[in-house]
Structure formats: C-alpha cells, structure tokens
Amino acid sequence: MRELVPYVPGEQPRIANLVKLNTNENPYPPSPRVTAAIADAASKGLELYPDPESTILRETIADYHGIDPGQVFPGNGSDEVLAHSFFAFFQQDRPLLMPDVTYSFYRVYCQLYGIQAQLLAVDEALQIDVAGYRGRRAGGVVIANPNAPTGSALPLTAVEQLLQSQPDCVVLVDEAYVDFGAESAIPLVDRYPNLLVVQTLSKSRSLAGLRVGFAVGQRHLIEALERVKNSFNSYPLDRLAVAGAVAAYEDREHFEQTRQTVMRSRDELTVQMWRLGFDVLPSSANFVFARHPKQDAAALAARLREHGVLVRHFSQPRIAQYLRISVGTPVQCDALVNALRLLIPAD
Ligand code: PMP
Image (cartoon, rainbow, N blue to C red; front, side, top):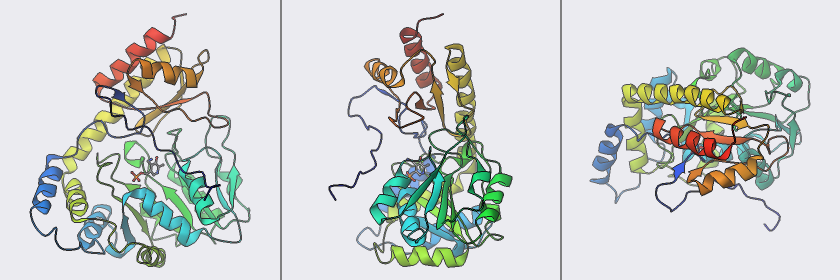
C-alpha cells in the first residue's frame, strides 16, 4: 500500500466565487425533472435496499441506445465501472495496451490490480495512432474517445480498426465525453464480442454529483462485470441515483440544449484563446487542451488561481506545458479570458 500512487482528483474548492474550470463538470444544472424525481424517490422507500440490478435504469439506457437491457451494466460513476472492467478483463499474462497520454486513472487501476500496462505513444499532434496497436501481444486495450485530457476524437472507422486488430482481447472504449461531438461505438457492440463501451452521466447529463455510469457490451462481458460487482457491492446505485438518472434520459430536450450550448461555448473559447496566442487542440469534449508558446503552464495555472480561475495542469511528460480548461458558461469563459488577458502581455 505504501507504494500505491492513487489518482488525484481535481480540486473541489470550499472558497465561494471561484470560476471552476478544472474537473470537466457541466456548468449547467441537470433537468428540473431530475431534481423532482430525486425528491419523489427520497419521500418513499429509503428504509429499503434499492434494486440490486437497477433494472429500470438498465431498461431506460437500453431503450435510449436501441439495445437489450442485458447489454447494460450500470455502476457508481464510470470510475467504478472502469475499475470492475479492469479487474474482470485485464488481469492477463499479456500487457494492457493504452496511449501514453490518456486518463490517468487507467494506470492507477493497473497498479491496484497488478496489471502490466504497455503505453503506446500518441503522435506529435497528440492523436492516438491506431495502426500502432496492430499485431501486438495484448491482454486488452483501453482508450478514451474522445481522449482525455486532449479532447481529440477518433472516427468510428478507427475504433473499428482497433477492434479488428485485437480480436482476442477486450477493447474498452471510454466515452465519458462522447456527447460533445464524437461518434459512439455502441452501434458496433452487436458485431464485436470484444467491445466494451463505457459512458457516464457526469458530463453531458450534468450529474457528476449523483455518481452514475455504465458499460455496454455483449452479454458475456456484462455477465463478467455482474460477477465482479456482486463480489464487491450488491447495491452500488442507490434509489435516488436510479430515479435521477432515469429522469435525465427522459428529458431529451434539456440534454440537447445543454450539450449544444457547451459545444458552442467551446468553439467560441477556442477562438478567444487563439487570439491570445494559445495553441488549442481541436476538441470534441467539454474542455479544451491548450498551451501558450511563451508561458509556463504550471505557473500560468497558479496565477489564474490567484485571479479566481481554477484550471487543471498535469505534471506529466509530453503534456506538462498544456492546461486543460473545462468549458463553463459564457460568463465563466469571459472571466477566464479576461484573467488571461491580464496575465499574458499582448505581442
Ligand atoms: N473517464 C474519463 C476519461 C474521465 O475524464 C472521467 C472523469 N474524471 C471519468 C471516466 C469518470 O467519470 P465518472 O466517474 O464521474 O463517471
């Protein structure tokens, strides 16, 4: 345990009035139908355990994606679903392949479960090079699409190429940010027995505080996850979480509106940051990944904090000069841009 290096979540500050652009939360609240459903669920039945299978939520998600409820595995946030997936599928005598720049929790799960990871370099533009995964001895593959913290998305054809090049192991595609402009691999599930897609309600459905995520895959993969879950915690989703999550899927209009607004703000923020001299990677997520040729990223993040704006910096090889900035409301984005204007001298 002394050698285990845990994941470090972004700061959740107790100070009021900070512009919080550091953990990729949705800047808009969930649908009012979610809060009403949670209040209703809270008014009855809390003395009873919840449905261990979260059947209603499985059915709702299955209906939304046009799949079978038996192909859905819900969990307490997608982090839990990912943890169970790593435990179930990647403890192999062959290495788990993943990009060198990706969600840093993957490496933590590897350490926790003794999984050997092999990191494959993303290219100069920080894009995943799918061809590099072909023909390698692998016990599994994990990618985030769009990738984190870059925001870059692979087209579905590239995901399919990956599935075909590693047909004998599970290929996990983490789609935490997919609703902000990428293509989901869920329609491929029926054709690829090795595909597991993981999604979350934390981002595009504004429910980071409720903790709901899920995996989609063929029945044999879902059954494996159910075994792990039932050997760990029979009730990962409480009654309030299930009620709120179901209501979130029922309000399609709210979902469409907020995600479109976030995507518009992202594109506007990108232009503003270009004007300030930043290189901004094209993003299909609710955040941008940017570097300034004349500013040290860690120092800039610290100075932004002094101006009341929180952004995320990762002291990792290859990306240490980048900042990951979540897309906020127009008012929050303006506050960021104004602070940057003060900190970065015009040429
Ligand atoms: N995957 C990726 C790529 C993420 O960035 C995050 C958010 N930190 C998660 C999964 C986990 O999200 P949650 O546990 O809130 O569903």
